[in-house]
Amino acid sequence: MSEPILSLTQALFLAGLFVATALAFLLAGWRLGRESAGRPMFEHPLADACDPQALAGEPDPWAEAMHGAPAPDPASADARQAAA
Image (tube, rainbow, N blue to C red; front, side, top):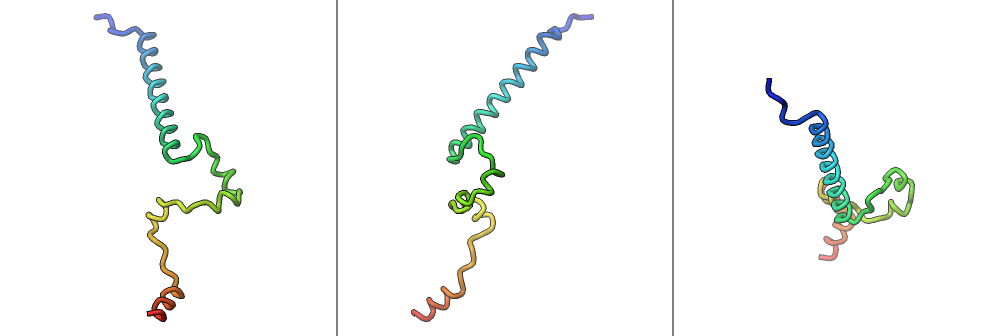
């Protein structure tokens, strides 16, 4: 039989190195993504949900685009027709 290319300790070391590198890239990408969105790296949404200040913030443009623009108020349409 031929001798294996890598010993068990070398294979485990390479597997651990691969996992550590993947986790480092994942963490860096997560941090850069949170930074570009203007959010803190660690945010607890359940704690912020009870905060009235957090609810009064700007509407999420992604959610708005997903659900469509809000329907116009019928009273404002009547006011525009009366002005014309």
